[in-house]
Length: 200
Length: 217
Image 1 (cartoon, rainbow over the protein chains, first blue to last red):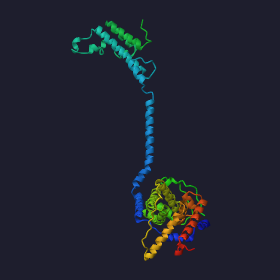
Image 2: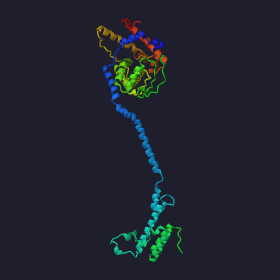
Image 3: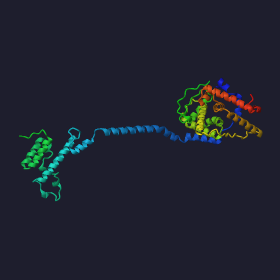
């Protein structure tokens, strides 16, 4: 509805004259271009519209998911699971006691290394009498390494399970004249059981 | 009197100049145009064609006389419809469609002028000289001359006044709507339209158009 202002601002006669003269029509080519575009937009990109509709949410979800996965990965990596210092100290055998949960393993490894060194030295200097050289392969490296001494030269793991059996084994070695082996076992026993006191 | 509502929060990012769309209420064919636009939004091509046929010629003439250049008018015309088509999903039926359409076209034209600084240096409206059915050659010439006088008179108007006049005549827009489309307040739009009408009448009188019986008052 036109207000008074609208009616007064315009001019009916001028409007009539204008509409009589200004009667151009849109060029048909322009009509075709616009209608073609409208049809194309309405039909053609329906699929892409659907894609566009899901594109942003999908990107958002993917970003959040990847970020969450990255945060989880970083948090797991930063947990004190296997610190570098623990690994190094277990190799060197110098880590302070109680520094890491692997301290016991590190100590055991160091003891095994010392044990093997002692065994090697003893086997080189004093071959065990029970060792039957004829039974060994010609170029066997067993005696060289000293890592696989016969069971009679040392105590078994079962014997080392407690101080009583370990001490009995040591006494047995002494009885057999394997004093160095007995001494070696005793030192190992004292290291593993510092509170052990020799029986009278 | 129509009242402009507050700026609506339409997501018309694809519109020229990315202006917000304000809405005018109470126009006669608002519902029909809006319904057609909504149907087109759902993929009804025929609805868009109907809507297009309602407004294409008036929009084209508006741009043709606003730009005074046929090529510019065609470019802006296509651009404006393209914006409307692409923004169909964001169209809200509370708007009077013709106001919305002419605002888009107006903004597209301003953008075009800014992009093409040379606009306005040459005019080429090339009036259509094809005869109407049963029109005598003398009448064709007379019509051509009358239209040329009209175009010349329009060119004498300042851009804002010409814009206001064309929006009123071609778009059928009220003063409030003209103010909204051009970004002016109501009083400014009203005075522009008044000055435009007065000056056009004066120019046409000078050209003796009234002698031909066209502008008799």
